[in-house]
Image 1 (cartoon, rainbow, N blue to C red):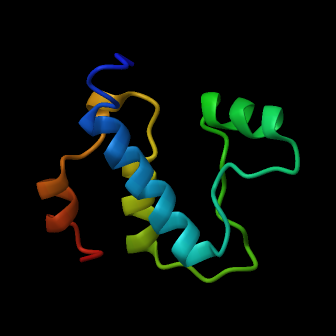
Image 2 (cartoon, rainbow, N blue to C red):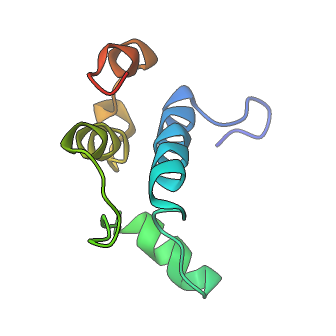
Amino acid sequence: MDSNTGHSYEVDIWSFGVIIYAMIIGRPPFETPDVKQTYKRIRENNYSFPETVTITDIARDLISKILVPDPLARPTIDQILDHDFF
């Protein structure tokens, strides 16, 4: 990250995926009681959908497409808005 320009657009997309996940599931996708473990889970893209929460396949698909490690593989905002979730 360049401190003069801020984060990239792709980071904003990833953050949007985290927000959607948290709104549906009720907690952030990578959250743990330990900050170091949380950052490790983020680096490893280690999240799952809990069996105790009902989530549609459409929502699961959108979140999974957004929360990918490769920023260039994430959908654009237009692709997100075209997704069946919306």
